Length: 531
Image (cartoon, rainbow, N blue to C red; front, top):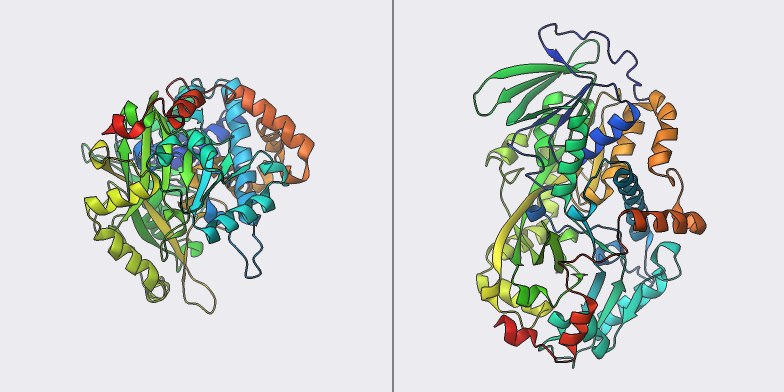
């Protein structure tokens, strides 16, 4: 049973160290969310946030380091695999959607109660779509639609196989397309685009104004647990070299890939045999109005053979700082760094005697992934432009720039009978005594920040959690309920969230449906304009 941290404000063992009830390591979306949640339920706790960079959300949560998709299982085809009998397994899509509904409700509460003062600064309504071509894939997409449409969480989805309707919805993708091969869309009108960097900064700003100490430009270099179960956190000022220590009853590692070496330094048994494999990414981006005006959706397709699940290509409409962008990718890159602004020694230094076997096993069993990575690394600019034109045949390469995205560290862990497995997804790891926890992994990641952090709170503060439930339920009315089993409650919280988050109003910088229709009917030719 996890600790309830009774006596959290009592003296700790190192008298020379400054005291904090909670230390958050990393200033990304996870720490930002956990800090805001804890401030709601324990307004008197002292919280210190430590970030190695000079600003908040400058790594994986930054708007340029991710696709900004509000992952809800609407368009990601890897969440709806085909079973051997031809039926479609929607369980993962339902699970991700349920998680996003929890996040969405907290955001609505946060907007109404001043935690998030600028909703349009981080959240915009953007349709999500699945795109396939070829008769077999069109058949799969139709069966996927049929499996989802009667589910309460997916009732607004559409299946589109008509060429004219395709062109009306996605004029950039229709221009110069050879429609002799069948194409189809799974269209979800209620998708969202999220600037997780702006969201993180708003949440951190709110919590800092209510007493949280922020140490930017400071790096946690070591963790050691004391006899009273408190943690001594050793910190270095990266600008001056100055050193300091903090003691805390609870530490959260929300440092992305940087959490891996810190978990290992913590020495907790739960980290034994645990490792990480970094996979980076890059996107083609454009902000040219003549191009961005003709695409208003996040459009996903299936991953290439041998590619990791999150590597399915997608063409995304983005809104960043009020400006419209298009993003295409991801193109996989590889580096031994665990952070975009990390060190080349991150991966080799993470290999320890206790995780060597699991790491080697993963290396031997992931040959298709290795081949895929090599192929991606060998891509030229023309190769990437060719991949883009599979989505948008009229695309002009000079309109787009290649931009490196963030690093994601996939979890390597021991598995009985297998030595080790490589996991793609988001994972929470916590010590049995509830004094330290970490969030690792990749997609759906940031979209599930709220349920993931509530999970951390329940695991690590088990005896306090019951007392927190009334406040948590005020913030997330459906907490503990599967909305897919309560359609009336889903409609209630969905309508409330839509109004509170202003998702019933299009963003001014996003092209309107009228422009899309105009383009599809030939009034404006996106090919001619972009060339």
